Length: 345
Length: 265
Image (cartoon, rainbow over all chains, first blue to last red; front, side, top):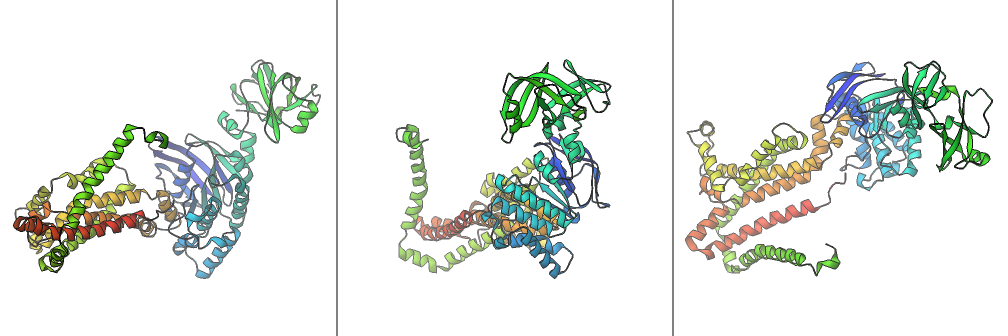
């Protein structure tokens, strides 16, 4: 377990404030947030590169708060090329071996395994300046993992890589994490990247943790408007709560659970909003007549904006549903969603 | 300026004229100097024991001053490149002071603390170190005038190395000093060499400070001055040409070293 308690880092013009997180061992943990939210600073504080003002970091029971980076057993892979430019790929990978306890034969075996797994055996004699973005990141991963860290920190490792190679490297990263049993903490601002890799995640904003938990919880039950917006929920409305109902604009929306306070927000994921020609007579509690305002082609899906009373709902539907319902702007239809699809916060 | 409008633009011609003027101003005197002495007088200078020992002294003291700059200046340049602190600007200005102080004043300032009247002078004297009229004294003033050039060159070199490379090295298990010797130093080696040569080139051309501290032993600039005083232009020319050749060699080596491919980071 990596326990971060009350961690505060003060920098000129930016502070990371009172971060408390528990990250289980051997998991893939993702730190989400936009540029400037403090993700990299948090990573560097865990690594011992950034000075901690207060709070503590414990890794597997060991308090590392006051340990220098080289004594923490924490590897780091940055987004841009941080290979040593004067060393070839092979020497880059072996860089940390001399500080590692263990025998030469074991090291050779680890080296061969990693080089094999990361498919960089043909690059070993090359200098970093001649490598592509993907090759650089593979080398950086091998260099960090060969020392056998307890935690590997990854700072947006895919951002300097061609879109077409990202999926492959993501898969590789997942495999590496499973095989090595090392705790991975990865920073990203892409929710889809997080969704495909992470077991658990935390969302950061302005140097604070907005929400942490399982990735599905964050996706399905965002705890703030910020998180909801960030994970891609487009239907967010201010609401007054009355029991199981939320009063939104001129309508009453049925919720799955009672809200904690009298006033807040509700959020509904666009893919949870069903469009139909007639009112649905099922267990669906919320069904409102409306008019299609616009249709956006999003590639595999279509975004349909429907005005129901004073509320504009955004629904995400497939091409076949679009054709079947013959949806076009100006058309009248019904907007329906389950009470359990309504998240209040 | 795009090529189409260049030729009709008076400003372009003004820039070009200023360039031609500057180049002519630098090159004409030097080329003339190089051409003027006869082969015979150059030959005599090369075999003149005083000339040889003066140039040798100039080279040795300049290289020694540059070596001192490397030892004294490198850790300080690294500190300046990697840290920010209150008063950093003031410290940087102090380092550049030797550039603005008139050179004879540098010599006088060094002498004034090297005498018996000052505790540093008496401490040096107790150690058997003499500044006035000695090669040690020449090295001291040359290091004084050369250090700013060394420190600023090497500081820029260190600043060009991403701090993240050092962070990564630390995370891989290397201590601060191991990181410095395995990552920072190899990557800065070229700037350190360039700084060394800058410092040596600055030192070898120093006259004003040297003549105050040590007329004897005589280094090349002082010898040139002495020959000029005693024999006029023709007496000074052959030694001058030899010294220019030595300086040019240093300069060419520096350009070759610094123009080579930089590390791509």
